Every structure is written in structure tokens, then in C-alpha cells.
Image (cartoon, rainbow, N blue to C red; front, side):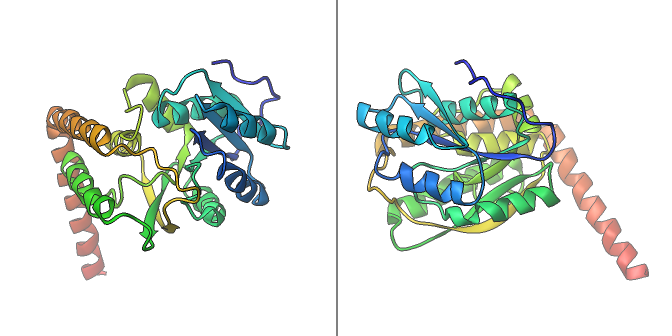
Length: 269
């Protein structure tokens, strides 16, 4: 897909918001309004939307600081986010916030993510969701199956939540990883990208953020097919962990030894 022609922004700290959209025409206007109210540019990615949603996205793209990218057919959330990241990098942004189009995220927290990234510009700033009563119980408890597999795949508890779609990514490290590694195209995207960045030792910071389900009543989670996809992901990622096992164990031992040395210095101080 061609990236829209625009004057490049200087390579200084600059953040945009990438929103993959698939048939959320009733919620996306509110989402975009909330982001623009915080002074953040928006990149919308039309992931093969219906005509009604495509018209709404076209309307929003006429607002200042809103850019629209299009897929001719639905290619999946992960592909849409990657399209947005690559466009953001070519436009000169150094960081990109990923949010969902259905309004489930507390978008007023976006500025908190930006300020955290100013302090830790090399880190992924990850949302740690605080759910309200609207989340289906099966999905709430099912998340912990994925969290457990991610803790195994990283041999750590560093990733506090592997499924939240509200994150701020440093684009240099993220795009470098995406050039060399496959990342899931659909609902497996959020878990896979965070594990692969962890394997590359990209630092992570965590911010609690409220999540509700969803503003427009539309969910694209398919219970059978997406659970099969997640199962396939964890088989693949566990195999990837086994290949990396010597390196992961060496890193874990090195971290334990470093922590012991710090404690010893504190005791002797």
C-alpha cells in the first residue's frame, strides 16, 4: 500500500495513534474525537470495511491530522496495525500508540502513555487492563491461559498482560523486528508481538488503564476460530522458546546474579 505523501516530521520524539478499523462505524467517530482532543495525530487503517464504515472513515479523514490508509479486503487486525506502523515510520513518527476502534479503551489515558514514553523512549508502554463488569467471564478467565503460556515462552513474569491492545510502541525497534519475524495477522497479534519484542530485550513499562466491552456492541472475536488460532500461536511460540532456551536461561541467570549484587552492595553500604 502506498503511504500518503506528506512532509516528513523531523526525527525527534513524536507520537501518532494507529487505529485498525473493521466495521465500527458507530464507535470510531467518538474514538477519533477523543484522540484528537489530546492533540495526537491519527492514522486510521480501513481493513476492508463495509461501505457504511468506509464512508464514515472517509468523512473522518477530512479532519485535520487524520490520515486514512485502506486495505481492499479484510486482512486482519495484526496486518492493519503493521500497515499503520510502517506508514507512521515513513511519515517520521518515532512512536505509535495502538488502540482498538470499538471504544473499549480509556482513551483519556493516551497522554499518560506519551509522558511515560518521554521518560523511557526505548520501551514499549503497555496497558495493564482494569476491567469493569462488562467483560464476559469466559474471556476474562480465558486470558489467564494465554498469560500462563506467555510466561512460559519468556521464562519470566515480565509481561503482566499479553492481550491488551492499548500500547505505545517505539517504532525503530518494532519495525526492525517486523522486518525479520512473522507476527500473527489477527487476534493472535497482540500476544505474539509483545513476546517477540521481549525476546529481543526491548524494555517494557506498564500502566493500569480501564477497559470496558465494547462501545458499539460489535465484537469480531470468533470463539472457535480465534481459540484455534491462539492454540496454534502458543504451539509455535513455545517451539520458538525452546530454540532460544539457552539464551533465555543465560539472561535469566544474569538478571538473578545482577539482583544479588545490588542487594549485596545495599547491605554493605
